[in-house]
Amino acid sequence: MALSKIWVHVEVNEGTVAPITLEILAKARTLADTVEAFVGGSADGIAETLGAHGATKVWATGPIDGLQGAHVGAALAAAVQAEAPDAVFFGTTYDGRDIAARLSVKIDKPVISNNTEVELDGDALAVSTPIFGGTQIVKTKFAAGSPAIALFRPKSFVAEETGGGAAEVAELAAGDTGNSGTAKVLDRHVEETSGPKLDEAAIVVAGGRGLGESDKFDMIETLAKLLKGAPGASRAIVDAGWVPYAYQVGQTGKVVKPTVYIAAGISGATQHMVGMKGSKNIIAINKDEEAPIFGVADLGIVGDVHKVLPKLIEALQAR
Amino acid sequence: MNVVVCVKQIPDPADPGALDPDHTLKRDGKLILDESDTYGVEMALQLVDKAGSGEVTLVSMAPNGEVAGLRQALAMGAAKAVLVSDDALAGAGALDTAKVLAAAIGSVGEYDLVLAGVESSDGYTGVVPEQIAALLDLPSIGFAKSVDIADGTLKVQRQTEAGYDEVEAPLPAVVSVTAGVVEPRYPSFKGIMAAKSKPVDTKTVADLGIDASAVGWAGAGQEIVDVAAAPEREAGEKIVDEGDAHEKIVAYLDGLKVL
Ligand SMILES: Cc1cc2nc3c(=O)[nH]c(=O)nc-3n(C[C@H](O)[C@H](O)[C@H](O)COP(=O)(O)OP(=O)(O)OC[C@H]3O[C@@H](n4cnc5c(N)ncnc54)[C@H](O)[C@@H]3O)c2cc1C
Ligand SMILES: Nc1ncnc2c1ncn2[C@@H]1O[C@H](COP(=O)(O)O)[C@@H](O)[C@H]1O
Image (tube, each protein chain N blue to C red):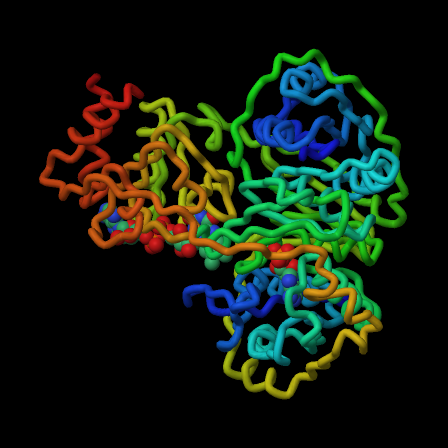
C-alpha cells in the first residue's frame, strides 16, 4: 500500500536544484501516489527540473529575509496541518537540518536524521540509519502519526527523470516565527573552486595524514587535475588546517560515490569510510599493510606515497 | 556575559560501540566529554573573558548521574553545571533530548547565549541545537566557524555549501559551533582540582516539570525494529610496491576506461 503524499525539501545551489533533492524525489515517488516539493525562496527556474523529476507541485515561500530554519520551519508547520502530507523528507544539508528541527518542535513530532534507506513497514514508514561509523544499520519505524520527518544522507538514492512537465507553483505562506526569525544574513561568501565538485566528481583523489606535511597535498591536487577529478581529504588534515573543511570526506564531511576513489596516506577510520565505501572502485596507497583502508580497497598498494604518487603523476603527464 | 553550553557525555569513541539488548547505546563504562563539545566550552570561556564578567554554565543530559565528562569541562573553566539524569529518559530521541535541555537551560537563570556542538560524536543527529532554539523561541545560527559579540549583537560566520555567510542576531540566541572553531585548552592541574568542588545540580525530569510519560521510550514516537551489520565490502588485490606500483594503478585506471 502506497502513501498518498510526500513532501520533499528543495535545496537550491546557485540557482539550480541540488542533486540530493532529485535523489530524494526519485525515492519518494516509489512510496507515495503524489510527491510535492517545497522551497525556502522563489520557484523561478526550478519548477521545470522538479517537474521532470516527478514533483507535481512546488510550494515556494518567496524571498526570505533571514535564515531558512526559522522561516521555512514556521511556514511549513502551518502548511502541513492544512495539506496533511504523510511524510516530509529532507537531505542532510545545512538548511535541511535546520528546517526539519524547527518543524519537529512546531508540530511536536520526532525527526530521524542520517538515513540511507526508507521503506513501508505495514502502513508506517521505516528508515535505516548507519551507526557506529556505518558498521551497523538500525531500522526505525515512525510511530507518532503523520507527518514523519526524515533526513537522508546524500547519495542514498539514484536520481531519475520521469519526463513530467513543470511543477505547478503554489505559495507557501509565511508562518509565525515568534522571536526566532531575527537572525539576518549580512553577506554571502562564495569560495572559489575549480574542477568538478567533490560530491559529483567521477574521480576523487583524497589525501590523509600519511602525506606528512601540508605542502605535500599539492601532489593530491595535481593528480586530481590530471584525472579531471576532485581532491578530497581525511578529517585529520582538515583539522590540522592543511585544507578547507569543504574537502572533508566522511561522517562529518561529504559522502562521495565516484567511479574511482584514490586514498593516499589515509588509514581508513570507520568515520572516513562511511563517506567513501560506496565508491565503485577504490585504490588505496598506505605504507602500513595492516591499514584498515585495505579492507575495502579493490587495488591496495602497500607503499610510500612519496614514492608512488610522483611516479604516478609523471606517468599520467606523459600520456 | 553569561553563556550556557550544552555538553554531551559519551562513551569513549576509541572503544568499539555496542548496543544494549533494548537497542539503546551501551553506556555502562565511564563517560567522557564529547570532543565536539570542547569547542563550545572553549568558545564560551573566551567570550566571557572578553566581556570581562559573567560565567559559563554547563547543561547535560546523561544516564546514571554521570558527571565525569562535566568535571572535564568544569576543569577547563566553566563555573557550574546542571545535569539531568532520569531512568525515564532511556530511549530518548533528539526531540526529547532537546525538550529536556531547553527546560534545564530555563532553570539556569539569566543568560545571553547558548552554545552547542554542530553534531555529537555518537548520536550525530545534528538537530538538537536548532530544536532547543525553537523550544526557547530564540534565533539560532548553526554551523558557526567564527563567533563574535559586539555591542550586544552576535556576529557569526556560518558554514554553507558554497562558502560561508556572515550572519547577525540579537541576544539571547543559540549557536552551534563546528570542530576547530577555536583551540580547546587543556585543563590545568589547578583547574582539575578546582573542578572537584564546583557545583553540579542534578535534576530529574519531574524537577523540570516534564511529564515522564512524554519522553524516552514512552514518548519518542519511534520504534527500533531491527539492528543488523552493514554489508561488508570485499577487498580486492593487494600488492607491495617494488617501484612499479604506479604502472599497476595506470593499468587499473585504463581497465576502467577513465583515462
Ligand atoms: C565523531 C567523529 C567524526 C569523524 N568524522 C570524520 C570524517 O568525516 N572524515 C574523516 O576522514 N575522519 C573523521 N573522523 C576522524 C577519524 O576517526 C580519523 O581520525 C581520521 O579519518 C584519520 O585521518 P587519516 O587517515 O588521515 O590519519 P591517520 O589515521 O593518522 O592515518 C594516516 C595513515 O597514513 C599512513 N602513512 C603514514 N606515512 C605514510 C607514507 N609515507 N606513505 C603511505 N602511507 C603513510 C599510515 O600508515 C596511516 O595509516 C571522525 C572522528 C570522530 C570521533
Ligand atoms: N544529552 C545531551 N546533553 C547535552 N548536550 C547535548 C546532548 N545531546 C546533544 N547535545 C548538544 O547538541 C549538540 C548536537 O548533538 P546531536 O544533535 O546529537 O548531533 C551536541 O554537540 C551538544 O552540544
